[in-house]
Amino acid sequence: MIKALIFDLDGTLADTESMHHLAWEQTLLNNGVTQFSLETFMNYVGTSNEKVAEDYIESNNIKKSSAELIREKQNLFMDLIPEIKVLPGVRGIIVRCHTTFRLAVASSSHLKEILFLLQSQKLNSYFDLLIGGDMVTRKKPDPEIYLKTQQTLDVSPWECIAFEDSEHGLNSAKNAGMYGVAIPNKFTMNHNFSRADMILTSLTEMNDEKINTLLQHAP
Figure 1 (cartoon, rainbow, N blue to C red):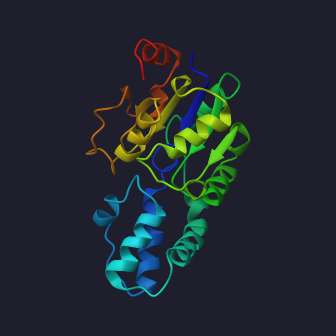
Figure 2 (cartoon, helix red, strand yellow):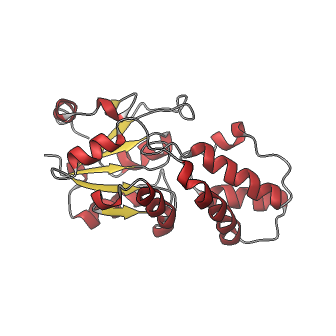
């Protein structure tokens, strides 16, 4: 029996990746990095702010801490949040399912980013739990964020469906023992989703029949 639906945020619930790229591009430019192309950024999709900051501090000898660089990027990103839209099917599945299932977000983005974005879309009240990347030690594909979410919700891993748009995110959920539904987008269409229990083109396709189909197989 499925008791919880757990969603990644970036690229799964909301079309944020272009805005994350813009915020990082400007942040790195402000710190002496002359180029941070969209193609380069795509290599970081599904990872974390920490990964970008640590890589560029090392490769470009930036005299700031990872936390300082991330804070600069977050300030720019937060200004862009009002321009961000939720993806097709998101509002429908959240409104439809919040009375039947426990809903959570498990995202590599920091909690304040998650909360501000959901508040801007008037969706925050539908979620039982929000877990950000700043609330765990090990990042996706490590299962820590999904295990923390599952334990806080007080449900078993096999009672959860995780929705992810990236290979790292999907593997994080699968490593935690959950059902994993992949929803690739233009940034992640070439990722390896071989471990997915189901692949959708958007959340508009998710319904009770699909959930029942998942339950016919062990996660």
